[in-house]
Image 1 (cartoon, rainbow, N blue to C red):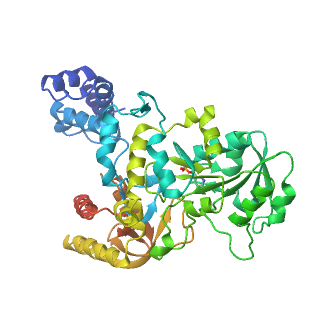
Image 2 (cartoon, protein in one colour):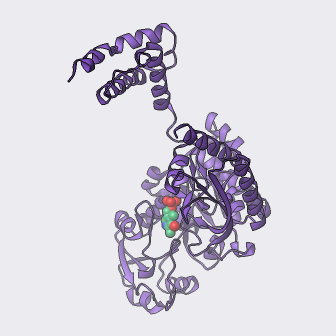
Image 3 (cartoon, rainbow, N blue to C red):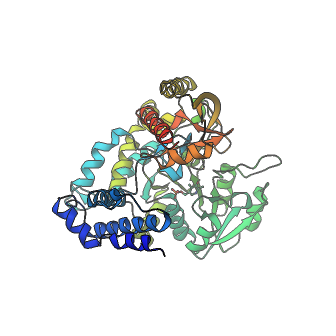
Length: 475
Ligand SMILES: *Cc1c(COP(=O)(O)O)cnc(C)c1O
């Protein structure tokens, strides 16, 4: 190493020096030691790296304690920033599992905050003055809305399926069509969950065709349950046959076997009224006589993450008595948010307006187009010659493994920036605070207004202004 470099390395201040300087100037007052010391070390190390990489002597200002302390504060504030943070979903995928699935309705937030920060009657029967059931908050309303006789809730639908299988079919055979052995994201696979529950999977039929006689032939004295899974994230088309719910229920009755259905996305609203393809409703499954139905709280229902189990009282009572229930117990904040969300369903038009997932799914194209026009004019107002903004007729997706083949017509905004690739724009937007998540199509960064919230158009405008300024300064 040459002498110049060595001389410069000797000038690097020690941790103590920076610590003392920043502390005396009260610049470290709000930084905990566990963050501060590593931040100082990183700052010194970064400067050391610059010295090592540079052929000439560094500017005097680089060694100034003020500058180094500012760098330490910068490091520290990045290290202390919340990791779970608000993100702008411009993907057009409404129930986006990676981005938090459903947004809670503002109508439920007041009670949610109160229940979270105050004591409540979570498991206390105020009338009787003794221990009560955690599920009573939502049991009645779930029955009222769905027509079920009994209900219970757990922390998600995967847990609901596991708990039901463990209760109803542990050590026994469960008959499932080969066309319904689904895998959803996050490693939830029906055969694996079945194995974990202690139930024995008995596959019948073929991938594309399963008949009533396939179920009939598979029933024996080991059979404990007939199981149907909603093939929520794919569809088998062409030469197909599946056994309908009514028929499956009839087979179950004939052999005195319970029938369970994992609806996955489960909806209480018939989407065909809003011009979307029909997604089987919870009510329809119960009407058909299915004994136990499970579905998610945060997919098409538009509530918090939860698993909802509906069915006959005998089955639900057995499920409630399973010790596994304690391990998949629903949290009080979830219960508060779920009860609030369910209350909105008493008036369906209100539910569609006030539950963000439903509102976004049923949003008229005209409303989306007007937002697209707003976003377009905001970006054009930046008056930057490098920016090209186009409205494009593309499609949104329901997501969350629901309405798999449905393309929701949408009007998107496609952006390209001179001197930047579409990937470059995507990366910059993703790393912005708040991150803006879009997609790339036709070499453009695409934003779908369907999943944007009102105030986010302005936030996107600002993000682009920052990006353009950033890129200009680095030219
Ligand atoms: C989404 C889904 C699940 C899992 O539900 P979570 O609430 O995510 O645990 C299970 N089964 C089907 C068919 C699904 O679509």
